[in-house]
Length: 433
Image (cartoon, rainbow, N blue to C red):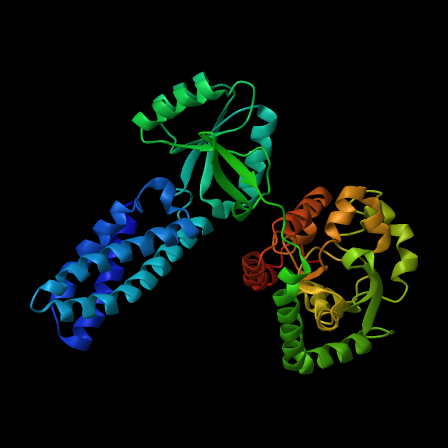
Protein backbone atom coordinates (compact mmCIF):
# COMPACT_ATOMS: atom_id res chain seq x y z
CA UNK A 1 0.00 0.00 0.00
CA UNK A 2 3.04 2.29 0.35
CA UNK A 3 2.85 3.65 -3.24
CA UNK A 4 -0.71 4.84 -2.64
CA UNK A 5 0.23 6.52 0.64
CA UNK A 6 3.04 8.34 -1.15
CA UNK A 7 0.75 9.38 -4.01
CA UNK A 8 -1.92 10.66 -1.62
CA UNK A 9 0.67 12.60 0.37
CA UNK A 10 2.00 14.06 -2.89
CA UNK A 11 -1.52 15.18 -3.84
CA UNK A 12 -1.97 16.87 -0.46
CA UNK A 13 1.48 18.51 -0.67
CA UNK A 14 0.62 19.91 -4.11
CA UNK A 15 -2.68 21.28 -2.83
CA UNK A 16 -0.89 22.74 0.19
CA UNK A 17 1.76 24.31 -2.03
CA UNK A 18 -0.98 26.00 -4.02
CA UNK A 19 -2.35 27.54 -0.82
CA UNK A 20 1.10 28.65 0.23
CA UNK A 21 1.80 30.33 -3.10
CA UNK A 22 -1.56 32.09 -3.27
CA UNK A 23 -2.11 33.13 0.34
CA UNK A 24 1.28 32.83 2.01
CA UNK A 25 -0.13 30.86 4.97
CA UNK A 26 1.78 27.94 6.52
CA UNK A 27 -0.91 26.37 8.76
CA UNK A 28 -2.64 24.30 6.08
CA UNK A 29 0.58 23.21 4.28
CA UNK A 30 2.01 22.05 7.60
CA UNK A 31 -1.03 19.99 8.65
CA UNK A 32 -2.88 18.89 5.52
CA UNK A 33 -0.57 16.09 4.19
CA UNK A 34 -0.60 14.12 7.44
CA UNK A 35 -4.29 14.83 8.09
CA UNK A 36 -5.20 13.80 4.53
CA UNK A 37 -3.41 10.45 4.71
CA UNK A 38 -4.82 9.80 8.19
CA UNK A 39 -8.41 10.49 7.11
CA UNK A 40 -7.99 8.25 4.06
CA UNK A 41 -6.72 5.51 6.36
CA UNK A 42 -9.76 5.97 8.61
CA UNK A 43 -11.95 5.56 5.53
CA UNK A 44 -10.12 2.26 4.79
CA UNK A 45 -8.70 3.60 1.55
CA UNK A 46 -5.49 1.57 1.98
CA UNK A 47 -6.99 -1.87 2.44
CA UNK A 48 -6.17 -4.26 -0.36
CA UNK A 49 -9.73 -4.66 -1.58
CA UNK A 50 -10.27 -0.88 -1.56
CA UNK A 51 -7.55 -0.25 -4.12
CA UNK A 52 -9.68 -1.41 -7.03
CA UNK A 53 -10.99 1.50 -9.05
CA UNK A 54 -14.65 2.41 -8.97
CA UNK A 55 -17.28 4.45 -7.20
CA UNK A 56 -16.33 3.00 -3.80
CA UNK A 57 -12.90 4.58 -4.03
CA UNK A 58 -14.42 7.93 -4.99
CA UNK A 59 -16.78 7.79 -2.02
CA UNK A 60 -13.91 7.05 0.36
CA UNK A 61 -11.87 9.99 -0.91
CA UNK A 62 -14.85 12.34 -0.71
CA UNK A 63 -15.66 11.19 2.83
CA UNK A 64 -12.03 11.79 3.83
CA UNK A 65 -12.33 15.32 2.45
CA UNK A 66 -15.49 15.83 4.48
CA UNK A 67 -13.63 14.74 7.63
CA UNK A 68 -10.85 17.26 7.01
CA UNK A 69 -13.39 20.01 6.29
CA UNK A 70 -15.25 19.18 9.51
CA UNK A 71 -12.01 19.35 11.52
CA UNK A 72 -11.16 22.70 9.94
CA UNK A 73 -14.63 23.99 10.80
CA UNK A 74 -13.88 23.39 14.47
CA UNK A 75 -11.00 25.86 14.11
CA UNK A 76 -13.58 28.61 13.48
CA UNK A 77 -13.60 29.25 17.23
CA UNK A 78 -9.90 30.17 17.15
CA UNK A 79 -8.81 33.78 16.51
CA UNK A 80 -7.41 32.93 13.08
CA UNK A 81 -9.93 30.18 12.40
CA UNK A 82 -11.64 31.92 9.48
CA UNK A 83 -8.43 32.04 7.47
CA UNK A 84 -7.62 28.42 8.26
CA UNK A 85 -11.06 27.27 7.16
CA UNK A 86 -10.81 29.34 3.97
CA UNK A 87 -7.43 27.87 3.05
CA UNK A 88 -8.56 24.32 3.84
CA UNK A 89 -11.71 24.57 1.72
CA UNK A 90 -9.59 25.95 -1.12
CA UNK A 91 -7.03 23.14 -0.90
CA UNK A 92 -9.44 20.21 -0.48
CA UNK A 93 -10.88 20.14 -4.05
CA UNK A 94 -7.33 20.19 -5.42
CA UNK A 95 -6.34 17.34 -3.10
CA UNK A 96 -9.40 15.27 -4.07
CA UNK A 97 -8.88 15.66 -7.82
CA UNK A 98 -5.15 14.97 -7.63
CA UNK A 99 -5.64 11.97 -5.34
CA UNK A 100 -8.15 10.33 -7.68
CA UNK A 101 -6.06 11.17 -10.74
CA UNK A 102 -2.82 9.77 -9.31
CA UNK A 103 -4.57 6.66 -7.99
CA UNK A 104 -6.15 6.00 -11.37
CA UNK A 105 -2.81 6.51 -13.13
CA UNK A 106 -1.18 4.03 -10.73
CA UNK A 107 -3.96 1.49 -11.28
CA UNK A 108 -3.70 1.96 -15.05
CA UNK A 109 0.00 1.10 -14.89
CA UNK A 110 -0.77 -2.01 -12.86
CA UNK A 111 -3.54 -3.08 -15.25
CA UNK A 112 -1.36 -2.50 -18.30
CA UNK A 113 1.09 -5.13 -17.09
CA UNK A 114 4.08 -2.79 -16.72
CA UNK A 115 4.67 -4.31 -13.30
CA UNK A 116 4.33 -7.87 -14.62
CA UNK A 117 1.75 -8.77 -12.02
CA UNK A 118 3.78 -7.80 -8.93
CA UNK A 119 1.06 -5.37 -7.78
CA UNK A 120 -1.92 -7.47 -8.84
CA UNK A 121 -3.95 -9.27 -6.22
CA UNK A 122 -3.43 -13.02 -6.17
CA UNK A 123 -6.78 -14.78 -5.93
CA UNK A 124 -7.66 -18.35 -4.97
CA UNK A 125 -10.92 -19.69 -6.44
CA UNK A 126 -12.97 -22.20 -4.46
CA UNK A 127 -16.00 -23.93 -5.93
CA UNK A 128 -17.18 -26.37 -8.64
CA UNK A 129 -14.63 -26.86 -11.44
CA UNK A 130 -17.03 -25.84 -14.21
CA UNK A 131 -17.98 -22.59 -12.47
CA UNK A 132 -14.32 -21.90 -11.66
CA UNK A 133 -13.38 -22.31 -15.33
CA UNK A 134 -16.05 -19.78 -16.37
CA UNK A 135 -14.90 -17.28 -13.74
CA UNK A 136 -11.24 -17.63 -14.70
CA UNK A 137 -12.07 -17.05 -18.36
CA UNK A 138 -13.92 -13.88 -17.37
CA UNK A 139 -10.94 -12.62 -15.37
CA UNK A 140 -8.51 -13.42 -18.18
CA UNK A 141 -10.66 -11.46 -20.63
CA UNK A 142 -10.58 -8.47 -18.27
CA UNK A 143 -7.01 -7.89 -17.06
CA UNK A 144 -8.10 -4.46 -15.79
CA UNK A 145 -9.81 -6.18 -12.85
CA UNK A 146 -6.46 -6.40 -11.06
CA UNK A 147 -6.92 -10.03 -9.99
CA UNK A 148 -4.65 -12.93 -10.93
CA UNK A 149 -5.92 -16.45 -10.23
CA UNK A 150 -3.16 -18.52 -8.63
CA UNK A 151 -5.12 -21.67 -7.79
CA UNK A 152 -8.45 -23.48 -7.72
CA UNK A 153 -9.86 -25.55 -4.84
CA UNK A 154 -12.96 -27.70 -4.82
CA UNK A 155 -13.68 -27.57 -1.09
CA UNK A 156 -13.29 -25.16 1.82
CA UNK A 157 -10.78 -27.49 3.53
CA UNK A 158 -8.52 -27.36 0.50
CA UNK A 159 -8.86 -23.57 0.39
CA UNK A 160 -7.97 -23.25 4.08
CA UNK A 161 -4.87 -25.40 3.56
CA UNK A 162 -3.83 -23.28 0.57
CA UNK A 163 -4.35 -20.04 2.50
CA UNK A 164 -2.29 -21.32 5.41
CA UNK A 165 0.56 -22.05 3.03
CA UNK A 166 0.31 -18.43 1.90
CA UNK A 167 0.56 -16.92 -1.54
CA UNK A 168 -2.85 -15.30 -2.01
CA UNK A 169 -4.49 -11.97 -1.18
CA UNK A 170 -8.12 -12.94 -1.78
CA UNK A 171 -10.38 -15.97 -2.01
CA UNK A 172 -13.30 -16.02 -4.44
CA UNK A 173 -16.09 -18.41 -3.40
CA UNK A 174 -18.44 -19.74 -6.07
CA UNK A 175 -21.95 -21.10 -5.40
CA UNK A 176 -21.98 -24.88 -5.03
CA UNK A 177 -23.16 -27.78 -2.87
CA UNK A 178 -19.85 -27.89 -0.97
CA UNK A 179 -20.12 -24.23 0.05
CA UNK A 180 -22.87 -23.94 2.63
CA UNK A 181 -23.29 -21.27 5.28
CA UNK A 182 -21.23 -23.17 7.86
CA UNK A 183 -18.35 -23.74 5.44
CA UNK A 184 -18.29 -20.10 4.35
CA UNK A 185 -18.34 -18.94 7.97
CA UNK A 186 -15.38 -21.18 8.75
CA UNK A 187 -13.54 -19.88 5.73
CA UNK A 188 -14.25 -16.23 6.61
CA UNK A 189 -12.80 -16.63 10.12
CA UNK A 190 -9.70 -18.35 8.77
CA UNK A 191 -9.19 -15.57 6.22
CA UNK A 192 -9.79 -12.86 8.83
CA UNK A 193 -6.86 -14.09 10.89
CA UNK A 194 -4.58 -13.91 7.86
CA UNK A 195 -5.84 -10.59 6.42
CA UNK A 196 -7.12 -12.24 3.24
CA UNK A 197 -10.24 -10.93 1.52
CA UNK A 198 -13.26 -13.19 0.93
CA UNK A 199 -15.37 -12.43 -2.14
CA UNK A 200 -18.61 -14.20 -3.01
CA UNK A 201 -19.29 -14.56 -6.72
CA UNK A 202 -22.95 -14.19 -7.76
CA UNK A 203 -24.82 -16.94 -9.55
CA UNK A 204 -25.38 -14.62 -12.52
CA UNK A 205 -22.38 -13.48 -14.53
CA UNK A 206 -22.14 -10.39 -16.74
CA UNK A 207 -24.27 -8.30 -14.38
CA UNK A 208 -23.22 -4.69 -13.81
CA UNK A 209 -22.84 -3.73 -10.16
CA UNK A 210 -25.31 -0.88 -10.68
CA UNK A 211 -28.08 -3.46 -11.16
CA UNK A 212 -27.34 -5.15 -7.81
CA UNK A 213 -28.56 -3.89 -4.44
CA UNK A 214 -27.97 -5.52 -1.08
CA UNK A 215 -31.37 -5.51 0.68
CA UNK A 216 -31.80 -6.73 4.29
CA UNK A 217 -34.95 -8.85 4.63
CA UNK A 218 -35.80 -10.49 7.99
CA UNK A 219 -32.17 -10.09 8.99
CA UNK A 220 -30.90 -11.73 5.82
CA UNK A 221 -28.76 -9.82 3.26
CA UNK A 222 -30.58 -10.54 -0.01
CA UNK A 223 -29.18 -9.47 -3.37
CA UNK A 224 -31.77 -7.63 -5.44
CA UNK A 225 -31.26 -7.75 -9.21
CA UNK A 226 -32.78 -4.83 -11.12
CA UNK A 227 -33.87 -5.33 -14.72
CA UNK A 228 -32.20 -3.44 -17.58
CA UNK A 229 -33.50 0.12 -18.01
CA UNK A 230 -34.31 0.28 -21.73
CA UNK A 231 -37.34 2.57 -21.59
CA UNK A 232 -37.84 5.15 -24.32
CA UNK A 233 -37.44 8.00 -21.83
CA UNK A 234 -34.08 6.72 -20.57
CA UNK A 235 -32.80 6.54 -24.16
CA UNK A 236 -33.67 10.15 -25.07
CA UNK A 237 -30.27 11.61 -24.00
CA UNK A 238 -28.48 8.81 -25.88
CA UNK A 239 -30.54 9.46 -29.02
CA UNK A 240 -29.82 13.19 -28.94
CA UNK A 241 -26.11 12.69 -28.25
CA UNK A 242 -25.84 10.11 -31.06
CA UNK A 243 -27.33 12.39 -33.69
CA UNK A 244 -25.48 15.52 -32.62
CA UNK A 245 -22.08 13.80 -32.37
CA UNK A 246 -22.60 11.93 -35.65
CA UNK A 247 -23.51 15.17 -37.45
CA UNK A 248 -20.45 16.93 -36.03
CA UNK A 249 -18.30 13.96 -36.99
CA UNK A 250 -19.60 14.03 -40.57
CA UNK A 251 -18.77 17.72 -40.89
CA UNK A 252 -15.28 17.34 -39.49
CA UNK A 253 -14.47 14.14 -41.40
CA UNK A 254 -16.01 15.18 -44.72
CA UNK A 255 -12.65 15.91 -46.43
CA UNK A 256 -11.20 12.57 -45.28
CA UNK A 257 -14.29 10.65 -46.38
CA UNK A 258 -14.23 12.35 -49.77
CA UNK A 259 -10.57 11.42 -50.24
CA UNK A 260 -11.29 7.80 -49.26
CA UNK A 261 -14.19 7.64 -51.71
CA UNK A 262 -11.92 8.77 -54.54
CA UNK A 263 -9.21 6.25 -53.61
CA UNK A 264 -11.73 3.38 -53.54
CA UNK A 265 -12.93 4.26 -57.04
CA UNK A 266 -9.37 4.58 -58.39
CA UNK A 267 -8.22 1.30 -56.82
CA UNK A 268 -10.83 -0.99 -58.38
CA UNK A 269 -13.97 -0.77 -60.53
CA UNK A 270 -17.24 -0.24 -58.67
CA UNK A 271 -19.00 2.21 -56.38
CA UNK A 272 -17.27 3.83 -53.40
CA UNK A 273 -19.95 2.78 -50.93
CA UNK A 274 -21.06 -0.73 -50.06
CA UNK A 275 -24.71 -1.06 -49.11
CA UNK A 276 -26.06 -4.00 -47.16
CA UNK A 277 -29.35 -4.72 -45.44
CA UNK A 278 -29.01 -5.17 -41.67
CA UNK A 279 -31.43 -5.80 -38.83
CA UNK A 280 -31.97 -2.86 -36.50
CA UNK A 281 -34.09 -1.86 -33.52
CA UNK A 282 -37.08 -4.19 -32.93
CA UNK A 283 -36.21 -6.17 -36.07
CA UNK A 284 -36.68 -3.34 -38.58
CA UNK A 285 -34.24 -3.58 -41.46
CA UNK A 286 -32.14 -0.68 -42.73
CA UNK A 287 -29.40 -0.16 -45.31
CA UNK A 288 -25.98 -0.05 -43.68
CA UNK A 289 -23.31 2.04 -45.41
CA UNK A 290 -19.60 1.26 -45.56
CA UNK A 291 -16.75 2.11 -47.88
CA UNK A 292 -16.32 -0.74 -50.35
CA UNK A 293 -13.29 -2.85 -49.42
CA UNK A 294 -13.79 -5.84 -51.78
CA UNK A 295 -13.86 -6.45 -55.51
CA UNK A 296 -17.28 -6.40 -57.15
CA UNK A 297 -17.38 -10.20 -57.59
CA UNK A 298 -16.82 -10.81 -53.86
CA UNK A 299 -20.26 -12.31 -53.24
CA UNK A 300 -19.92 -14.71 -56.19
CA UNK A 301 -16.51 -15.94 -54.92
CA UNK A 302 -17.83 -16.52 -51.40
CA UNK A 303 -18.90 -20.10 -52.17
CA UNK A 304 -15.44 -21.13 -53.38
CA UNK A 305 -13.87 -19.78 -50.17
CA UNK A 306 -16.37 -21.34 -47.79
CA UNK A 307 -13.85 -23.92 -46.56
CA UNK A 308 -11.66 -21.10 -45.19
CA UNK A 309 -14.43 -19.57 -43.07
CA UNK A 310 -13.03 -19.26 -39.53
CA UNK A 311 -16.55 -19.65 -38.11
CA UNK A 312 -17.23 -22.99 -39.79
CA UNK A 313 -20.32 -23.52 -41.89
CA UNK A 314 -22.60 -21.06 -40.03
CA UNK A 315 -23.99 -17.77 -41.28
CA UNK A 316 -21.01 -15.83 -39.91
CA UNK A 317 -18.31 -15.53 -42.59
CA UNK A 318 -14.79 -14.23 -41.99
CA UNK A 319 -11.39 -15.05 -43.51
CA UNK A 320 -8.15 -13.79 -42.02
CA UNK A 321 -6.47 -13.12 -45.40
CA UNK A 322 -9.45 -12.72 -47.70
CA UNK A 323 -8.29 -12.59 -51.36
CA UNK A 324 -11.41 -10.62 -52.28
CA UNK A 325 -10.20 -7.52 -50.40
CA UNK A 326 -8.67 -4.74 -52.49
CA UNK A 327 -5.40 -2.97 -51.67
CA UNK A 328 -7.13 0.16 -50.44
CA UNK A 329 -9.76 -1.99 -48.75
CA UNK A 330 -7.12 -3.75 -46.69
CA UNK A 331 -5.84 -0.42 -45.37
CA UNK A 332 -9.36 0.81 -44.64
CA UNK A 333 -10.21 -2.34 -42.71
CA UNK A 334 -6.91 -2.24 -40.83
CA UNK A 335 -7.75 1.19 -39.44
CA UNK A 336 -11.56 0.73 -39.38
CA UNK A 337 -11.94 3.64 -41.81
CA UNK A 338 -14.43 1.65 -43.86
CA UNK A 339 -16.92 2.14 -41.01
CA UNK A 340 -17.00 5.97 -41.28
CA UNK A 341 -20.08 6.14 -43.58
CA UNK A 342 -22.08 4.54 -40.77
CA UNK A 343 -22.09 8.00 -39.19
CA UNK A 344 -24.82 8.67 -41.77
CA UNK A 345 -26.81 5.76 -40.33
CA UNK A 346 -26.31 7.17 -36.85
CA UNK A 347 -27.37 10.67 -37.88
CA UNK A 348 -30.47 9.17 -39.52
CA UNK A 349 -31.43 7.39 -36.30
CA UNK A 350 -30.94 3.87 -37.69
CA UNK A 351 -27.86 3.13 -35.57
CA UNK A 352 -26.16 4.35 -32.42
CA UNK A 353 -22.55 5.28 -31.75
CA UNK A 354 -22.42 2.37 -29.28
CA UNK A 355 -24.47 -0.82 -29.43
CA UNK A 356 -24.50 -4.48 -30.52
CA UNK A 357 -23.00 -5.43 -33.86
CA UNK A 358 -25.48 -4.89 -36.75
CA UNK A 359 -26.25 -8.29 -38.26
CA UNK A 360 -27.59 -9.29 -41.69
CA UNK A 361 -30.93 -11.10 -41.59
CA UNK A 362 -29.40 -14.55 -42.24
CA UNK A 363 -26.89 -14.18 -39.39
CA UNK A 364 -29.55 -12.88 -37.01
CA UNK A 365 -31.82 -15.82 -37.83
CA UNK A 366 -29.02 -18.23 -36.88
CA UNK A 367 -29.16 -17.01 -33.26
CA UNK A 368 -31.47 -18.62 -30.69
CA UNK A 369 -34.81 -16.81 -30.53
CA UNK A 370 -34.29 -15.47 -26.99
CA UNK A 371 -30.85 -14.12 -27.88
CA UNK A 372 -32.16 -12.60 -31.11
CA UNK A 373 -34.99 -10.56 -29.58
CA UNK A 374 -32.85 -9.37 -26.67
CA UNK A 375 -30.22 -7.98 -29.08
CA UNK A 376 -32.95 -6.09 -30.93
CA UNK A 377 -34.07 -4.14 -27.85
CA UNK A 378 -31.45 -1.48 -28.63
CA UNK A 379 -30.07 0.01 -31.83
CA UNK A 380 -26.98 -1.59 -33.36
CA UNK A 381 -23.81 0.40 -32.85
CA UNK A 382 -20.85 1.77 -34.77
CA UNK A 383 -18.73 0.59 -31.83
CA UNK A 384 -19.47 -1.84 -29.04
CA UNK A 385 -18.11 -4.20 -26.43
CA UNK A 386 -16.94 -6.82 -28.89
CA UNK A 387 -15.28 -4.21 -31.11
CA UNK A 388 -13.07 -3.00 -28.23
CA UNK A 389 -12.43 -6.55 -26.96
CA UNK A 390 -10.73 -8.18 -29.93
CA UNK A 391 -13.15 -7.86 -32.86
CA UNK A 392 -12.76 -10.69 -35.39
CA UNK A 393 -10.34 -12.62 -33.17
CA UNK A 394 -13.20 -13.41 -30.77
CA UNK A 395 -15.16 -16.63 -31.09
CA UNK A 396 -18.74 -16.36 -32.28
CA UNK A 397 -20.13 -17.27 -28.84
CA UNK A 398 -17.98 -14.59 -27.19
CA UNK A 399 -19.17 -11.91 -29.58
CA UNK A 400 -22.79 -12.80 -28.92
CA UNK A 401 -22.14 -12.83 -25.16
CA UNK A 402 -20.58 -9.37 -25.26
CA UNK A 403 -23.50 -7.98 -27.27
CA UNK A 404 -25.99 -9.37 -24.74
CA UNK A 405 -23.83 -8.06 -21.91
CA UNK A 406 -24.16 -4.58 -23.38
CA UNK A 407 -27.93 -4.81 -23.76
CA UNK A 408 -28.49 -6.09 -20.23
CA UNK A 409 -26.13 -3.62 -18.55
CA UNK A 410 -26.56 -0.55 -20.73
CA UNK A 411 -25.89 2.79 -19.10
CA UNK A 412 -24.50 6.16 -20.14
CA UNK A 413 -21.33 5.38 -18.19
CA UNK A 414 -20.89 2.12 -20.13
CA UNK A 415 -21.27 3.99 -23.44
CA UNK A 416 -18.64 6.50 -22.38
CA UNK A 417 -16.22 3.74 -21.36
CA UNK A 418 -16.64 1.98 -24.72
CA UNK A 419 -16.18 5.23 -26.65
CA UNK A 420 -13.04 5.97 -24.61
CA UNK A 421 -11.64 2.51 -25.45
CA UNK A 422 -12.52 2.67 -29.16
CA UNK A 423 -9.51 4.77 -30.35
CA UNK A 424 -7.13 2.40 -28.56
CA UNK A 425 -8.79 -0.62 -30.18
CA UNK A 426 -8.44 1.02 -33.60
CA UNK A 427 -4.76 1.82 -33.04
CA UNK A 428 -3.99 -1.71 -31.79
CA UNK A 429 -5.81 -3.11 -34.85
CA UNK A 430 -6.46 -6.40 -33.02
CA UNK A 431 -8.78 -8.56 -35.12
CA UNK A 432 -9.15 -5.90 -37.84
CA UNK A 433 -9.21 -7.73 -41.18
